[in-house]
Length: 633
Image 1 (cartoon, rainbow, N blue to C red):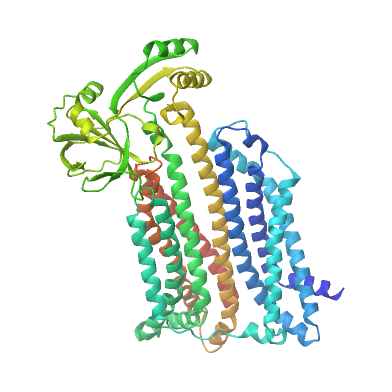
Image 2 (image 1 turned 30 degrees about the vertical axis):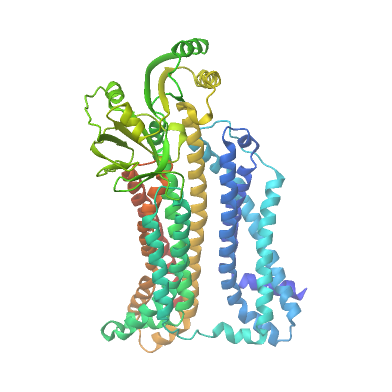
């Protein structure tokens, strides 16, 4: 069959680009297969808190599928442009559109089959490594590898839809463009774009607006939605700034005669200017992907590294109980003996019931649920505090002490239209009362009357109990106390159980974050490769002509380095700037997970930026060699 032979020979002639497309598709299929396989793992479904991980895996699988769709559309457009000459030639030799569509269909089927085979081999091979990584994060030995044909079918079907969309796009492109003109179109250079100052300024305003919202994001109910809005604005602004701003930058450099009329700069700027629309969109995409990698890894790694700090904050004792009256010691001892529990240190704090509201930087507290709600306020007397901590504070009626997790300092405390002087900030270990997502602020008042005036009129008792036992006996002891005292789940917290819960949730987040970041990193590297390859093919004839009129090998190499370096570093610099402005928002979001250690977050951020930059520079070096190979050889 002629069409089959032509389709196969076309793929074989462009073997390097074909193999790279198959390799990239295989990696995407492998990552998606890993997500689908672990998501449907029967042993995972039986574990405690498994639904949280399963939900994360489901969202991550959909997200990586969207990344794969975007990348394969990008790579397919590049391959199709390379085949324009062949399709144009076939049309001039008398082939109909139907025959051209058949060639494209056969090629897509071949690419799909090869990619699926490679992807499933990689997926089946590396799913074991992924499970080992997940087991080490969760510290769960019961997690076993499972294999079902259903997972294979889901993966093949989902990517079959992507390849079908690629084929539909190819047909649409063939319908819109006269095939006889494809030959000329493959050689047609883009016209020099005009600097669009309106788009550039609009993009800058949108970008700065996104930065402003991110900086102002607080650890309150509106924090997450504000962060999402900031992300949307930054994405839009990045594309507009890169597309319009890069053209304006090149135009300005072109006007600088001292800079522009140097061989390497002249060749680089004049070459890039004619293709900057396409370049700028690609660079903006690389910038966004790098930023997404930074945000996902910094957030997930910070939670895992800060897990023990968070656990100690939530559970300073092995068992935390919030009760409406003092704990019955006889009942406690009876249940302890029944469950082979050895009781140790205990602590009981009498305080007012929590009031939720917002506390601004000036110390003004407003109670109630709204978008600004960020604080849980609890009050105890200085007498209770001195007994617990062994201190000797004395307070007047208008004086208070504050125990604040994030170590903020307030000039005063104003609540219920009355001002209180803050004279100290001691540390109080009481745990997370009722598992609140809001930051607890403990107010230490002069006496019972002042405590009621500041906080709620209802008193509660926060009990901390240390004990020694096996894990299962400790759980049984906790459950029986909860049943006897008729406490809801928010009033009881077992440290070992909480540690297991946090390990599962945060370990699952890190696992998902690493796999999603890997998908984005692969996409970023391959977009860079295709960009360099496209540039090399486009500049090949231009450099040959310039070399024929006297441009030396050394000058050609300098011009190439100048052209690549001039725009190549923009995405990673942009990603680091984005991350710097996103950091306050990430800090605020993590505070809702009771992670208040900003120093830890900063260290993780710097480490991830260093690793990403190193990987980015490595890709830069490899792809620059590919570009030079097309130009100089």
